[in-house]
Image (cartoon, rainbow, N blue to C red):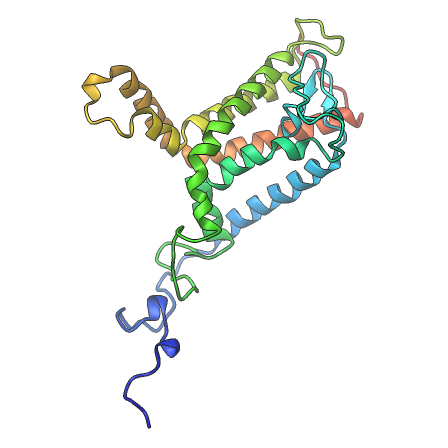
Length: 274
């Protein structure tokens, strides 16, 4: 005999729960709202495919004086780097896989847990939600309180790791002012690409929400901390462009790696400016 109410397991959840307004259409938007999440998913997927190929290739990542940002710093003996480059060799000769796998975990973890990238791939891949005013298909929501999404809370610690990596890439950029014989006074097209890349990487890193919070997020009286207030203000201005910097730096780091690949494979010679 029916009890007058359905078992809770049969009740619709999410936006279709009994406590929500009963709207039959999934959404009332008439624009092409799906273009943004589809474009985001396509862009991120393209980078994932490319970076995975390059990370496991273990070849064509060095063309004097340029070293791919995917492979720097070198943490294994089997890594080829320029003379005087950041070869730390912490893992010795026992590491037989691509040395890129030892270092990419830090910038990758920083980007995966980034507040903007969370929004990007939550919408693009998980449809949670796919767009503003478009209901997500999931019946339940736990946020980032359970595994694996609870790991997103490690973003600040990945920021701490991303800063020295950016510093090492800065050193790599300085070394691009040497020629193939390690003599200073060189500047090629690759030098310009590396300069643009490191500028975007630092801008993206310092525009991070965690960086802004570290600078002055817990201060109660800005007047008592003028230096931290100034740093907090600078990080805040950069933070307004965090999305653009995230995409620009993602494209620039892939472009630098691809440029080194073209040079290393002999596809063309680096045009020299002076």
